[in-house]
Image (tube, rainbow, N blue to C red):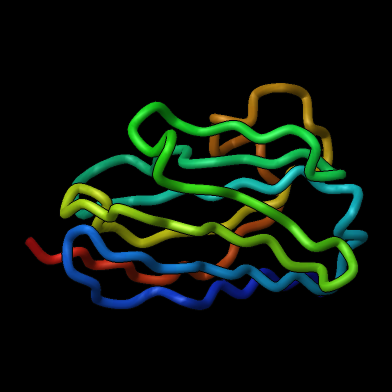
Length: 125
């Protein structure tokens, strides 16, 4: 069965960095658009970053542009999210997700076919 397993979350001070990983199995990884979302307590799940099948095109929400970088290694079936200059408002559970259709609605959670279980990121001030 399909599995997306996130890792790399934790507690970090403001200004620090974390690198999240999402290892995929059970699907043709290189055929999927991959996205990172986050959800803070009491808030809706929001799009953070996305990357095309080959990695040639990336997308970011405005609040993380210049601080976060999404990348993928199709040989390892893994997508990454490098997070620098972290802020307390980045605190959330971070999820990776896989989208087979890549219809362009990559910011919508409903677009995605598979989800990981999430990893907690906490940024202290």
